[in-house]
Image 1 (cartoon, helix red, strand yellow):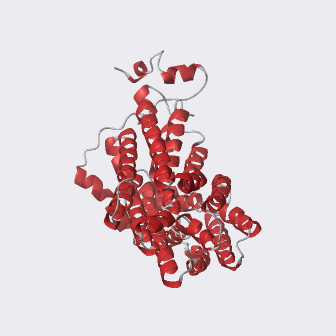
Image 2 (image 1 turned 180 degrees about the vertical axis):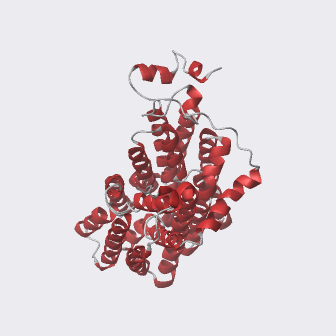
Image 3 (image 1 turned 90 degrees about the vertical axis):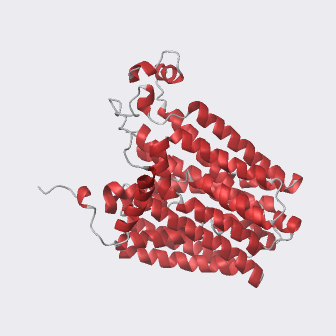
Length: 437
């Protein structure tokens, strides 16, 4: 059957086309939901530490170590996620990822020992979320959109960070009223809803249903099946890492993104609710502050994408990391009043993942056609930093009976990152240089 024949008059894409709507927006919406829900699953441990301590007697350090494993896997699988999607298709990979995360959540309802927490929330949930990561949004935006691609990438990127925060007030309310298993029940329901949407509506490429990408005149030809073996497919990200490791730019981006992860989802997302609890703030109110951070993050990330098209990415990163560092240093010196936490939530929220668009742009400028694989490794640095801070925050609480030293150190690291971006001086990738007149 020829591609145009796939677009049957009664099909949903054809019905939408008659109303002036491109099916790419449906795929983008399903992707948004998928990334939002998986991000919510990544953020759920923020409300679990206290309840797990009370029920099982595990220390904050032990619980944080298990959650750190999940962040490591979430990051390390990023470079390979694109290879999986190219070989097996976006729809299969996304559905498999959601199923794995759901399996981890279901298993945790009956867990009773610490090794089960490591297995379920460290390994199973870590692998499931890592199979999508940020690569899913980039792949969908690239395949389905020729016009407004930057807008789509910004929205999907924002969904990841926002999803980690916006769910927390509701999860905290359920956990406080009915127990932590009820909160995870909501996460499970959202995962199943997203999986159903993926299976029903997701398509790998617009050419599969006889469409051109949004904004393009002609359908993009389906590439021939890859001739690489499975082992060679897995080796391609490693080859990209080998090539990039000789570049100073790569190590600056890797190091600053390590600090980015340590100062966001590793520390604040994981430990902020527990930190507020030490100052007498109930989990629902603390999670509400995280939701405020998520709302301002959405605006900040989309705005950062707009700024990245108009200003030097190094300058933007200098200000982003610098202001984030100052906000984290400010927090330990507050009295944790509503007014002071609100100031922190606004300024910190605008900067939560505003670093992503300029970092992606720098990677594209410096590494050309291998930028997606190189950024996968840079993102791995982000998650390694997150894992370090997730463990470090728990260690600080156990050893010093306070999370505040970890927050202060994270602020100092952000200031170091702000200075480090000045070291990016390498020329653009040769393929991206303008032709000589």
